Image 1 (cartoon, rainbow, N blue to C red):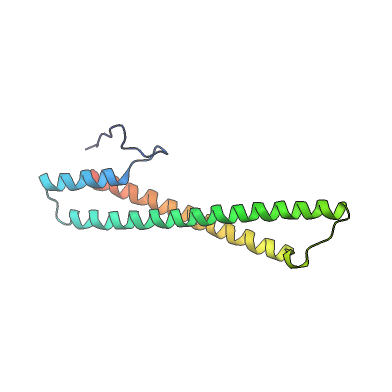
Image 2 (image 1 turned 30 degrees about the vertical axis):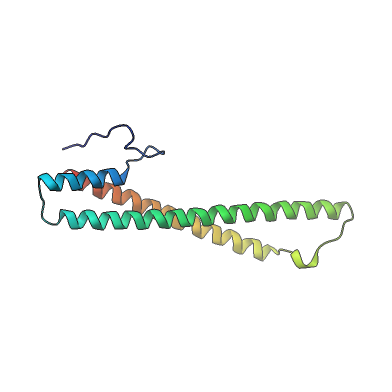
Amino acid sequence: MHARLRKGELDRKGDIDVEVLLRGAEKLCGVYDLPGARERIASLRAKYRNGRDTTVYYEGKVKEQGEQLASMNKNWMDEEDEDEDGGGEDEGDVWTMEDLKREEDEARELEAKKRELQARLRNMEKDLGGLMSM
């Protein structure tokens, strides 16, 4: 059994709208009750929302750190220009290579977590597809 999606049931990225699928599964349970299906739907909804919220959080962190890194790079380039022009260096605002490496490592870790969460969301969507074919 394949569910047909209507216009508006896809999110902006072209992925299936999980909430629409879950509501459809709930409606199907009202007509043809499968043992344990309602509990599984509730569990999938909670997992999906948790994963989505976590992904949004980490995407925000990645964006924030990207902006910080861009700002640091701009400041570093400005300081290099001042040094070439004979300008002074601000002692309290110096970033070492170790500081930059630590920030880059943290950004890479957040990107890895983001990819992992996105994979988990895709797996949940596959689970929903299996539930819909029951």
